[in-house]
Image (cartoon, rainbow, N blue to C red; front, side, top):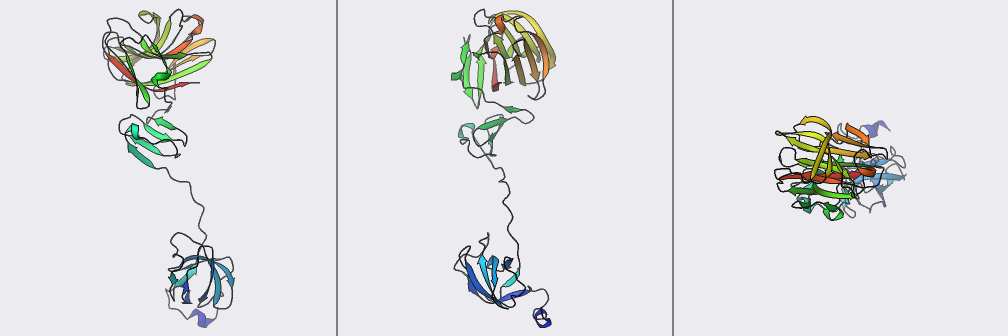
Length: 330
């Protein structure tokens, strides 16, 4: 560059300026523009012209003329508008690759949650105890500090067990069991057909104290003989114990078969595993880390290892209820 060209502009101004305005071409279309000096450009370079936006240099046509292409970047002047005389010109750059779209959120009633279709969307229901995350194909439910919940089947997909006075209702992505006070033992709930080997896991929120020895939990049973093994939160003197208990049938308690101390909790994870050899009963505070409460031969109490599993309450002296927010079988 000659010293005359170098001294043509005052300090602080763009290195080169257009000298004649031009009409903005359509995106990816060309226009020949006049510059104070065009020889500093090279074909393929990206330049920025104030007001006009970003362009790619197609060719250097003379010392002051260059053919440029409108790159159509966000913020570029609309096609057909005039780029004014003496607009500043500087070297530019290629736009970077688009980053991953950020997750968005919405909120409202659970019943107003949209159909799953936008992967990463978070929905905060103002009447449900979890956050919903859209996988693009389904909604996952997440309680902070816990494993992802697996939505239980709707009530209509289960079979009632000794339903009696118990009400069973679909409720905000889970199942709500409510049971009136009973003078004695009365296991009531919902069940499905089981075929070993299997691992069944449930998550529940215990919504009432119930009477001493009332239970909210899950079971495995034999449909012909009626024997059950239940793991659940058993109330006793205003605190809950994790108990594994044997029942001769839905109204007759037999014996304890394992326990895990008193817990001041309202939310519980339980798991029963039938590996075709043993029944294993687990409790977890979060659905990730599991404590084995007891293990026994699968035929030690339940004949043939059982052919039903499910969720249940045993109010035993006081009305009780529980919301089952997750049921998963693997």
